[in-house]
Image (cartoon, protein in one colour):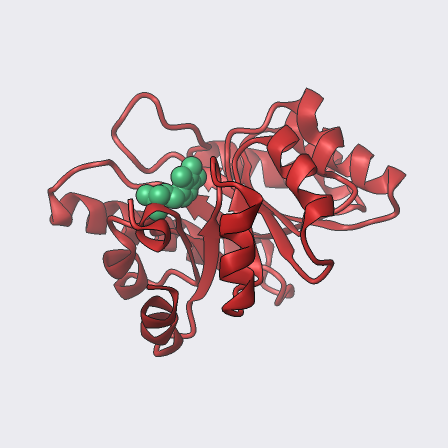
Amino acid sequence: MLKELLNELQLTATKLVAVIKTHPVADIEALYRQGQRRFGENRPKEMAEKHPLLPGDVEWHFIGHLQSSNVKYIAPFVNMIHSVESLSLLQEINRQAAKHDRIIPCLLQFKIAQEESKYGLDMPGAQALLSLDAFRQMANIQIAGVMGMATFTEDEDQVRKEFRQLKQYFESLRTDFFAADPGFCEISMGMSGDYKIAIEEGSTMVRIGSLLFGG
Ligand SMILES: *Cc1c(COP(=O)(O)O)cnc(C)c1O
């Protein structure tokens, strides 16, 4: 499955984050042996436990809801945090990154779905955050783009509309805040059930779990 998926993604230069939440290290090693290096977890402690068990060239992506108190578990090694949705979280990431003398790339998570349960910023919230002096002073984080999850629905038009919205947020923020920053370049959207639509709408990074593990 990995090979077919990678072939499909390669055509559009979309990157794959293999989502390994709940999967044992042996499953992850199997994907690693097939060449996969980018892995995503949504629990900080599980990620910190798996990290020393896998080779050093694995790229660790944190994709779930992150509480400030848990940033310390992943700050020493995480390669990207996809789920930043508040100034306070960003400040804690910056503080922990500084401790380890690192710069941690972060994506701003937007709430594009209709479900109440999904987290994320709205556009005014993101604009306000990026305009703050407190944000500009953070030297140990890099805002690398945006992330979003579409509504879990069979309605493809709805999903497409939400991904298109996220792409528009990305374009608008790039123009207003990151015009001189080529590091603001990622749109993390698309999961097992909707990644084809996400790619059509401009995803640069899909986060796929169940499809890879066949369940
Ligand atoms: C679990 C999860 C995924 C992957 O979902 P699948 O449907 O298993 O591909 C992607 N993104 C986030 C934030 C997740 O929690």
